[in-house]
Length: 140
Image 1 (cartoon, rainbow, N blue to C red):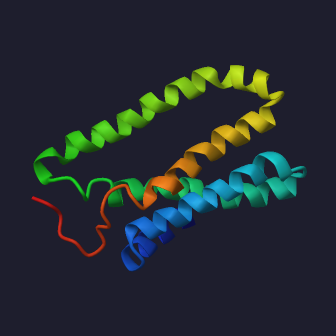
Image 2 (image 1 turned 180 degrees about the vertical axis):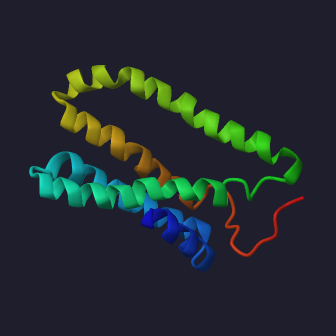
């Protein structure tokens, strides 16, 4: 919950895109730690809290930024297309996870790659994808 609350505050004060870049970067950094470096329940608890902050906090971003660039008449259709395209893109990853585990010699490496690659992709596209909408009126 702190990730949700802080994301809204940061998005209003720092901008939508810089805030998402922060959350993507935090997620990309914490996922390998969670899968590779955690060996005790205490470390797992602390790492899971940090992961939850960054990863689950991103869910607050979706209703803040995603609808803003689209004109009102097509906003619902656009958002549905965005959400469903992510599901379509993720389906082959889920189906290929078993093969990836076998190819990479274990679940730790596979989970780290599957967990980090989307964030690295998001980090690399954040600057070019969509306009900054902080302080801008919604398009008609």
